[in-house]
Image 1: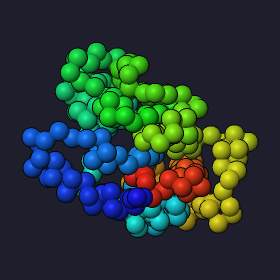
Image 2 (image 1 turned 60 degrees about the horizontal axis):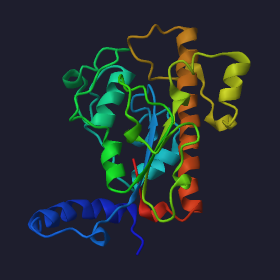
Image 3 (image 1 turned 60 degrees about the vertical axis):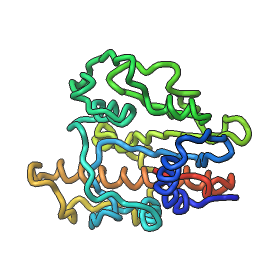
Image 4 (image 1 turned 180 degrees about the vertical axis):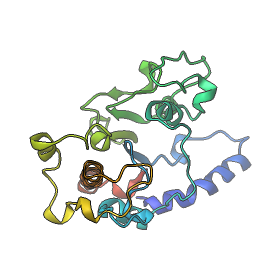
Length: 251
């Protein structure tokens, strides 16, 4: 029987409670619900999404996803920069506890620390990462079935549940500072209505100089968030096309 994302989220708590009550009984594989998991990440943005009330954000795909899911309103990062934060996400531990809090370090993880994808693989999941890691440590081969630009759930065995990460790098700070033909290529997918007027922006952070160059960067930042929204939509559309949407939890 197919399950919806809402059903899956609703049953997780009840399932954990039931598992605790029957901890003395052996668990059969057919008793364990294993929904697919699609994890979409982007880089270097704050909550500049329509579903978080930003007046300039044009993110209809993620707004629609949020409207029928769970939206976190009290979430905080474990570090003020990308790579240490990524180490916290993949291990579930604070960078300060792992020694991964210093940008561009290469920490040596203690033997008892695993990437959480390793636990999913042990549970029978096909785990892919497309494709960035940047964890501040070298991840073990056991972390992923496929960690590459071609990593995709489609390469799993028939009927196998999947955990697939897609890192949408278009919002990285290096991207919205490009100009001319390079930026035109990155933003080619945008429609005229998706474009931002630098002079109309009212949410310029107070620690930025209010100069034409800053406003141009900020407008391009918003535009590339919209490009990211399109790309997230591509992944969700693939789930729909393959009949997987009702069996997949999307983060």
